[in-house]
Length: 338
Image (tube, rainbow, N blue to C red):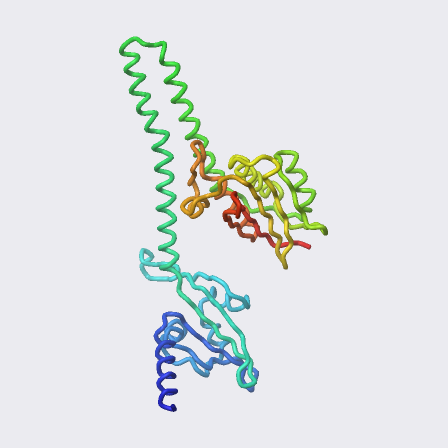
């Protein structure tokens, strides 16, 4: 039995030492100083050039660490931080993105803190490439939809001029103008998405705010009995909700089947925009928030992406799912200001 315990300990130690995640266990000593009581190989390489860390004062260790890591540690919670890699040759200089997670527990009567530092640069780069591929596909599709007909119509117009059929030129020019205006709107929407300003926050009562929206577009409203308020940029949030409500009506819902439901959660406010349209299939749900992605014939694909950008700038998050019985639910969750 003892041999089995030793083997399990060896296996656990081998796994911990070989993980790419830097692991530090810190505890307060008898002198009140926090010291490192355990560090795996990844932590030694990251913080001490591969040398042993056990027994080191944690504050001294952080004093020698990059300032970005030190600031992340001082925040006292899980966080992301970026360390600049200062190489002699700037061409090969690259920022490194880390995720810090921390957990506290008591062991043998002493308070301990487990710190995990995971390098995310490669994962984020792969995700960024995939996002750009999606965006490029959608932009290419949109440009092709506008430019291909224009090129064809220009050729047709030249043929009509050559044949003296001037009476049909007005129709050709009208179609070219329509396609050009659509492309202009697409580019203007892209510029608006790229230049979204920081929100100017003020405390807003949601009952009063949504009653004002009802005068612009019809929907059923369900509010908590004791009301709700948040610090929001009223103009930006109005734009975000109007985008969602217009989508709900375009999905086929009448005023009575399009609803906004506000729910108070601990420290959060949840605003749901509900419709009874046809919902979305899995492929559309997966891509709906990608900028420029649209299933509408004349859609820019910026409405939902801009809405998410506004919500996240307010410290919130946006999600969407199909409803039982048909239709879609788009949920905004924002920090509540009671």
